[in-house]
Image (cartoon, rainbow, N blue to C red; front, side, top):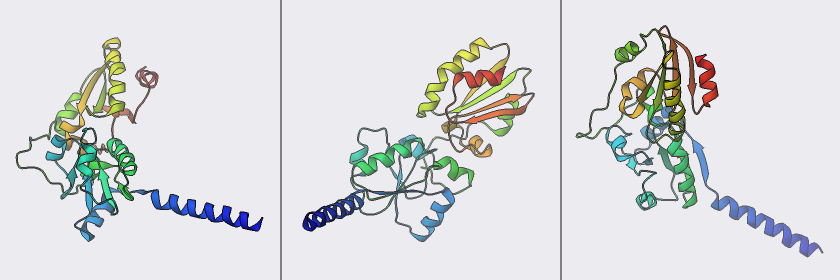
Length: 236
């Protein structure tokens, strides 16, 4: 009997050890923490999972670009060392979360995500590298943005990105509201990727973001997906 108990306990211990050996360590880091880490260690594995065009228009120095939405993503990360830590980021955390799951699935042992992404990086005025042939994407100035708010109607600003899934889900009902309430509200959609400096000035670190103004004053804002009923309630 004691022998059977011993065998069972040993099996549990071995199974637990095996699980610990195969389960990756997943942690997160802020933009300021990451920059300190980069100062200490210049050769860390740093993965930017945005599109090539986003990468060209500004990325963290020495980062490797592998588009998470590209069918060859796993091929591109194959050259990385799975036994060493890999740091991963995108623009505002949506794609990096997906990348963490995929990196874990293919055997990376230590994964560190910067969930605030390049938006947080830029808000903290940290340095970024741009390709010399990159297209300028500064976009709208703060003065131009403030001019949009000068209206006798309420102004609802929608900060979005083409890759942002919650943004895509919200667009149809925002378009509907724009038609239904045209006499009461003006809805303006602003592409965050094309307005880097504006997002930095307004401290927008994630998407989607809605900002509602009345008489040029901010009366409501929302970060993340929000239901149509909530938006309509704010506009009444």
